[in-house]
Amino acid sequence: MNLYKKIIRPIFFQINPDVLHEGIIKFGNILGKNFVTRKPLGLIYNYENSVLKTEVFGIKFKNPIGLAGGFDKNANLIQTLPSLGFGFNEIGSVTARPYRGNPRPWNVRLKQEQSLIINYGLKNQGVDIIKKRIKTQKRSIPLIINIAKTNDARIKGDASIEDYNKSFVKLQPLADVININISCPNTGDGQLLCESPFLLNKLLKKISQNKVKKPIVLKLKPDLSEKLLKEVIETVKKYPIVKGFIISNLTRNRNLLKKTDPKSVAQYNGGVSGKPMRELSNKMIKTIYKMTRGKYRIIGLGGVFEARDAYEKICLGASLVELATGLIYGGPGTIKSINKGLVVLLKKDGFTNISQAVGSRNKLN
Ligand SMILES: Cc1cc2nc3c(=O)[nH]c(=O)nc-3n(C[C@H](O)[C@H](O)[C@H](O)COP(=O)(O)O)c2cc1C
Image 1 (cartoon, protein in one colour):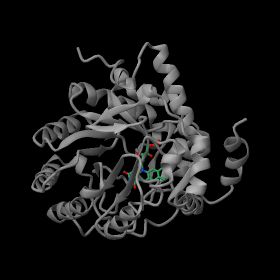
Image 2 (tube, helix red, strand yellow; image 1 turned 180 degrees about the vertical axis):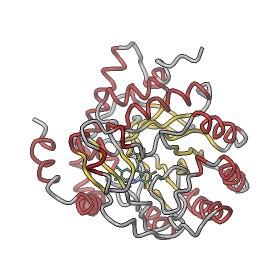
Image 3 (cartoon, protein in one colour; image 1 turned 180 degrees about the horizontal axis):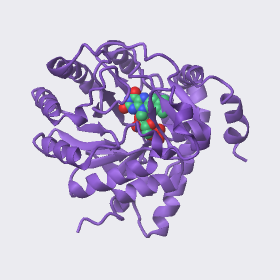
Image 4 (cartoon, protein in one colour; image 1 turned 90 degrees about the vertical axis):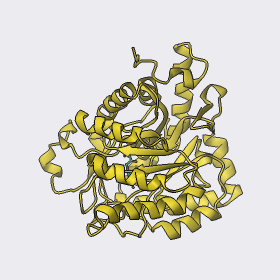
């Protein structure tokens, strides 16, 4: 019996999702601080298998499953997540200045869809506080730091480039990988750098002027037109500091909801996560892998709930996979279950290591 789905989730889902998220972060932080609480978590949830070990961006990962950006916004769970079996984690989005969040609700559950409408609008404590917190925590798995532009509509054009750069300079030394989020759907200015190759070019030029020592990936939205996507890739090709893409962020496309009348949720602002966006994100992984002939590493996410979902993204071209909504609906056992399932799927297809499966169903010729 799945204890989380049968007993814990029905109780959790009685609680307001914004309150629950904050509660879980506080509780998770306490669990991660003590060896006495970390150890039993590890015994229950850890799973290791050499088939899952992989090297991406020159970094070793014990398995390809990571926590998506936005769950641990302020880096409170760095010591907890390895005990839940994650191969890596991502914190943020972190912005140069703190932001208290858009008007609530920040999360709306769409249970029938296995989805959420998310509208934090890059709520976070800001780079200085988060930097201090990262420094105090012991790390045992690779850390991706997600940086974004401060959610303030007055910061535009060149000022937005400076704003990103501030966070980059402060956080690069602490990250294994830097994810530049150019696709948050919930900011006041609505300005997405992935829709403006001109500004993206300026941003990458500015970042390149630093001593860039860590791999950089760009987080894209899943419904970028093919024309814009081509322009983004052409821009990126000029900057060898960019090593990959995170595909994808939330979608604003409410027509993807299958069991919910979009009108019934029209009063909630925000982007849609989880199952409804899975195919959209898969399509984009497939396109980018093909367009770039596999030269960029892809971290795939969007609607990953079980091993099959992760495997599909890997076979389309993702080297690593992340999840957020799948964790909320499936509970902490989800990571172990995905990793175990991946081993079975890989063996069934005759692969002896996860890296062999990357792009295996997305032939480049
Ligand atoms: C609670 C929550 C908060 C999020 N906040 C952020 C964020 O701050 N920055 C970001 O890049 N993505 C954020 N996202 C988007 C996720 O990283 C991910 O791209 C999206 O949810 C699709 O993955 P999923 O279906 O596994 O949730 C958030 C998602 C959730 C569920």
